Image 1 (cartoon, rainbow, N blue to C red):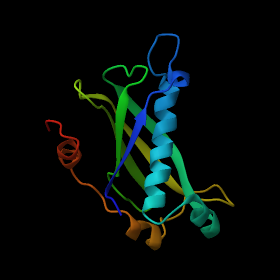
Image 2: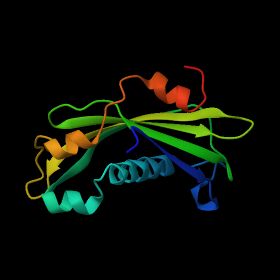
Image 3: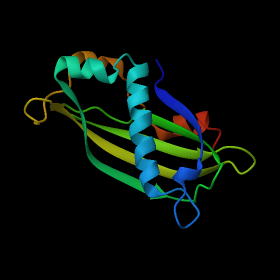
Image 4: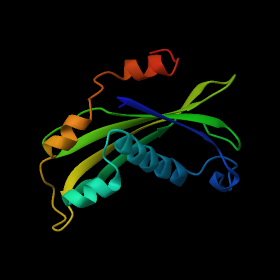
Length: 150
């Protein structure tokens, strides 16, 4: 069960916008995709959330774009839980171009709220969910894993 989840992707044609780089909507899609995959790797696939009647909803996204991703770039996407409060959890995501030009492309944070699916209202995070995720307290651990200067 990885504290820091890593997904490797190669930028496809349909991710490129009219400016010749990855469209910002792709970053949002990738963020949701890696969050869902990380949760499943921790023993919480979407069906398990549905069975409990509660799941994660996005409250906000913040993305800082540092460099453009281009067609056929190989990208490593790192994601981790940066905190757990009673009803919310910030999740961070780091996009890194692999290869000779290993660079941070973007940094992001999503604030997730744990929500009752029937009422749409936030509820306390279930103990079973909370115990499945370990908070990564320092981004330096992620930078070290990614082979980047802290």
